[in-house]
Length: 361
Ligand code: NAD
Ligand code: TYD
Image (cartoon, rainbow, N blue to C red; front, side):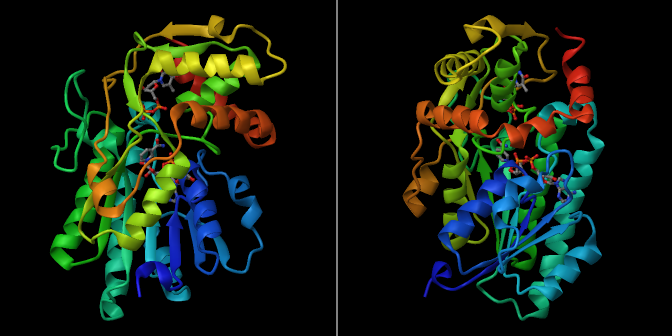
């Protein structure tokens, strides 16, 4: 009997966000007998529409609430037979962490602590069942920035976070690690590279470019556009997370990455060419004319790259979607789902956009 063969009940925090929503859909399709409870505060980044196909399903429950609310978390642990926490909830955007770091410390550090502490007490009260798991979903950004010839980040690369976002994620990783070593709580940590795909909030680079091309707006490239990110299609990430929950070793960290290092400028040019091919009507053609270099992000990490050897050799995971195929699917998704993203271009979004880009255009 493996963990994968018995029905589970997952508390998925941040399940209305980009990766969380993709994870909920993935899990629901793969393990339809499991019960899923989503806890999400519905911040600017949370969108209940992303979970609309599941509303009304008997084994799905959505709870709007904050992971820092200890009473609510304890209530959910009492009410539901939760044996697994898949913890996605976070403030996740580096640019927002530069504008206002406080919310990042609160949600990412205090929120993770609140969940760990509530889960630990619950787990103790039940006699420390060995099938329980706490998956802490984190980022490669905790490792800092690579030079052009440095080897990719491995699980033993020292932490060197450079932004308030990555520093707060690093703090939460350390707490998850400490809860295993001190209390034996079966935590698992994953550090993943940049994701892309459906339900990605419009202010991140790839959706921002897709949408701005459709609107005929400038495509802002920070600095010289030579920063490198290792892009992973979100569904490959979700598959990896399911494998880690079912087969990962408690107390271990697993790096997840796409082996898809791309410079920002090259990525945006690929998006422009795909849009020119797939979108019937565009205000500006060719879309590359919209590319605009703007002031660099303060402290902008130059390069991220992941060595996912451990996940491949120990759990048999491989990315399956190439960057060319994944970007094509993503562009098509944004073309087909205007009803999803149009309402997100709200007054709050415009205000944020002004703050980040107005002074740099
Ligand atoms: P996101 O910003 O799209 O979604 C975050 C979700 O968390 C939203 O639904 C939001 O409403 C919710 N949330 C925020 N604060 C909350 C709180 N206090 N209580 C309850 N819910 C709250 O983020 P994402 O891109 O889906 O990232 C999910 C996780 O994956 C994060 O922990 C992030 O650090 C990590 N990660 C992201 C990437 C990436 O490329 N996006 C890569 C690696 C790791
Ligand atoms: P982002 O999607 O914010 O992810 P992260 O900073 O977490 O890697 O940005 C991806 C890359 O694109 C990053 O190097 C910053 C850059 N970028 C731009 O050049 N212009 C933009 O408008 C944005 C949002 C990002």
